[in-house]
Length: 352
Image (tube, rainbow, N blue to C red; front, side):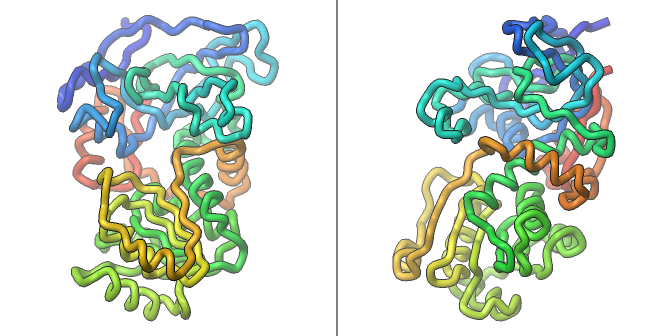
């Protein structure tokens, strides 16, 4: 029987199951986690199909996966807050802890970040995975391990909303009704108190789901100019002078262009979706409106814990996002379905 069965990307389009060495405790502050559930992210699929994302290129076989939960298998001598058998959500990016960005709390911007399933670092689709104690978040009894695997994308949504400075009573428009966009809608409304949340997409099924899950309004984009789509969106959603906050979780050029026209003067725009490296951007409208524009990348200090706490409280429900669970042996099938846009979030179990 394999000791540490792993789902390995050999090259674009080619994956295999491989028994890797069981990770060792490199520090007395580390723990070994027995991984129980892993969600599939768009970045995992992108590596599977293309073998690269921007400057990050898969040059040697790499274990996929980074949205995981599990049970503590063993702990280092200095670990104080966790013990074998504890159920945890796993934060998959380990910063250096020493650079300026780490010290100011923005460790997601650490230039030496070791992030799971980002070349050259292996991911979490394995039986065992090693992490520092403080990057494992103990799950309350009311939170399942399946929900624990969704803490990672939930933390992304939390960080995007924090970067956008969503505040109680505000109107928020979210472009893209995939997992991250849906979570942005939910977090904006239920965690940060937005009163009007508009989900924008071209997929009718996703919009129907969004309305039942988190959005107060939905809008289906048409094949017209960004200005025309923006005008109709503002009118149909009753946004008056425009939205207080606009978030793009799609990465699509036309969505980003439309988003700038949807924002009110003095409003805020946050880019959360990854797309083409370069796009045509309506800089004139941005300047004339004096928009506050930010990017958003992964998550930083406090985001993971807030996501866990909000899921535990019931305010941030994530169960509805789980479309299907498959066995570890069905991992490639799950990847294929995510690539085709089937469902919202697929979870891979185990391996046992």
